[in-house]
Image 1 (cartoon, rainbow, N blue to C red):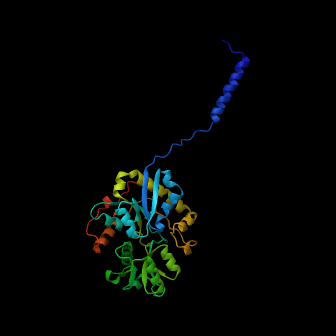
Image 2 (image 1 turned 120 degrees about the vertical axis):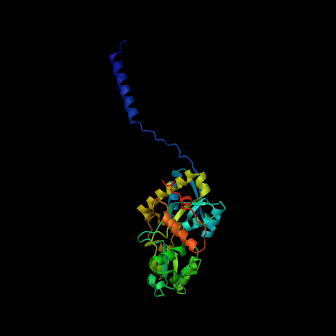
Image 3 (image 1 turned 180 degrees about the horizontal axis):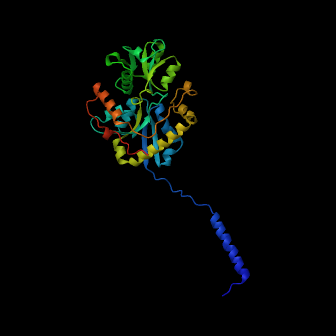
Length: 325
């Protein structure tokens, strides 16, 4: 059957219009939800090391990876460790020494990433002298009592830094001043000739007259912090820990690209003392990696030397890099 010519042209025009509309139609994006990988509770001290977690929270990076994260504020390392031991927190920022002590009888914690690592121009721990002491270099600390929290990473870093500068064991003297505010006050008054502080409190003390004798930016293998998780959490929900680390990696990239955009977080979360907010330089945060076996073994040797630990805690069982993005 022949189609009349006017009708043929009408049908042809209509088909071309339909084809054109189909070609111009926007492509429908796949908006399927991200798979929910669970919830993690993280015990958080008010330290600069934690900034990537707060950035990941503010930028919805945890949600991007299907993860819910509850940041649980703690006031001290003992409180942090009590929550972990009781199973009321899944992970935290601490140091390899803390993981070793958790794992002395059985593996309870695993280090999964560096949190903050000293870098050139950006120390993590500082050996400071009182401005009234006249001490300006490591040699001036021979036989001088240095305020530390004993049996902790602060004492470890102090001894290793001074040994690296040539001081012998009998020339290094420390005195227990467990509370950081007390250390700062005694340094300021001159009652304590020297003491060790983490940044940014070290920067605050220096702004008030303390002298930076030595910091760990020269020896970054000693003063780093780590993210660690309870072993049972890693075993039962590795996807959640992987998602956490992926979000942290993105947050670190954002901070390192422009740390000034997160000044309000430093203030809101109490990570930097108010007098320093306008001048404090946020340190660069490390890309995803875990402590080396040499770093682990040195910390283990120190705990053994001090008689704090007698067990040989396995690096392979305690440090896990398999969940990094």
